[in-house]
Length: 266
Image (cartoon, rainbow, N blue to C red; front, side):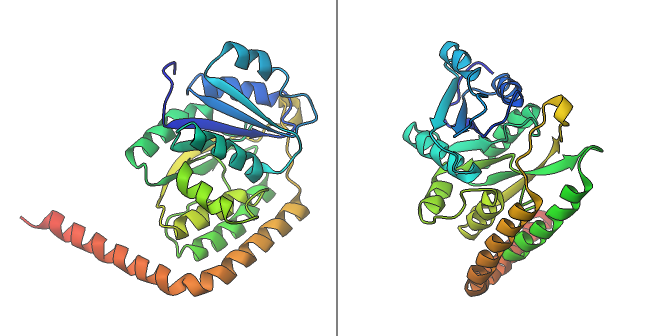
């Protein structure tokens, strides 16, 4: 894509992403304009190759944070800058090559059709996906679906998604959480609580081997403890919200029945 969008941008947080970062950025830029990279205190020099690219490409911007704050913190920084520049939506994708750059146009089109919604990726796993990761995410997905009363959050952890900038910024400014690995799940649940509907689109996900340049910062024990604490907080907040969520669910069902009735009337 050569013509820049004035409303939607691609936002790529990166921490020590190695050689995969350059491939990810090139893939994203081939399909969207603009693309912003937030270098989250990287120490591997992976952003060095981006500087000459950004200098020659007005569709690429590189933001550098002095120290690592976590994925959510990097996205927050990018959202603040995006809001100041007048953007209304941001597609977040990982820098490590797992997320499909080829799906960017379809996700942006879905967002343009439903600007009030968050467009959530539903991961389609290949045979190389670690079974422990695939099975383990079901636990977080169950809790996220409970916390939203099965309101449409198909996958809580897949970070390839389009966010409306204003409501997400408002949420993140009010809390000190949502800064690290727990960002994706908490963002989806809290946006749903705020009344932002979810649209789910399938997207392939790749797990690159070390020989392919794959880099993973996932730590099974640490990050699952982080998710456990996050869902504990959300459940404690969910309980007093339950009457409101139930009322919203019943209202949505009534509207759907009325719409079906209107559709079959002669």
